Image (cartoon, rainbow, N blue to C red; front, side, top):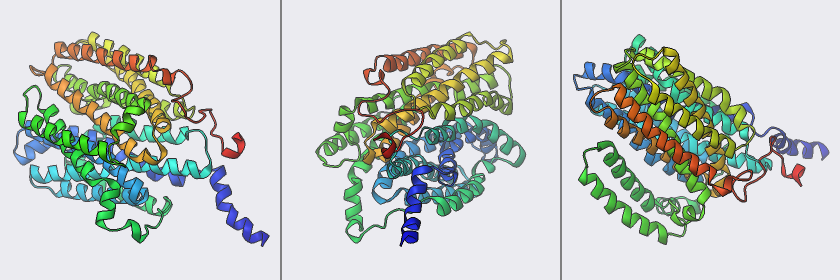
Length: 487
């Protein structure tokens, strides 16, 4: 009997002592890297795609916007599905969609097929981050952890922003060596590896009982009308933003017609998809979303806007411009995980806003005659911005989001990040409308100074961040404690 009891208790003891083994975290990291890599890797393939398919370079912008749009809508949707149907199931379903998208894109013969491929990739890659947060939160609860698993959250941060920065140079090497189709086909071996790891190492979801099965039951539990209303509203908003400065009145009208009834529906719903009342009451979470959007506005402006300037005004090749961003990715990767392991929120967020201000001033001082070292320094500074904003806001999200809604909240966290990136594209198209000149770059720097100041004010004036974390948050000591040790 003692032997049997000991064996039965062994998994529980192992979980308490080492809840986040590498076998659990590795598939989550790989999956979470797919969306940012696919977001940025396409940049170096647009010109070759246009030449091969005999279309204008401008028309290939749909390959960027389609993934942004699909991701902005699919992230919180995947989070809600993970909460209801099981995070492992949705994680694996997302990988299958990415595999399919890579295949369709790799074999695509026209722009329409490539756009479909990008939508599939956008939807599929959107499942990884919210599912990872659900699995991490669930594992922390099972292990009795009081504090956020900072090291694991840091790994997710590295898989997010750091990999986005290495996308352009990877894309430049792939496209230059093997052709533009490998911007899509690279997903095949990566998703195959992720699939094997997820099937072998991620814990299985609970079996769904018959009472929770069936289309009507599932549709009610996930609030399908709310999801559809959110999708229509977000799609129209993104199309409107991407069309600026020309006002897309049809998109604006669709946004209003979809958003108003959706808000009314969600306010009446007992368990809504988008909990407006909960978000209004949870100021810490709302401010986390806003800070994330503002900070990533700056990071993505460097990744895309400054890259355009380096190629058009500074005279660098696509590959050279991509390599100039490697310091940003390297710094972000180096400091994200050790910083996250300390479970800090306010300090990293202040550092994020301050470095964004410094980097923005640096952009204002750059000219086409500046030494290459100056460009590298700006990249390094924004690497700190990238790491600290992801670490601080991701930990704030973990602390502020209700445990039962961590999937949806994590998806919305990424949605606001995409709104920041979309806004950066809109601003970039405005400041460079007459060409990627020094004057346009300096105007971009002025805009980013304003965004940095707003992010700084959102942090230093936030009373909920004066202590060690949001109100009612668990302890944020350096080493996570179990319930037994903290009792």
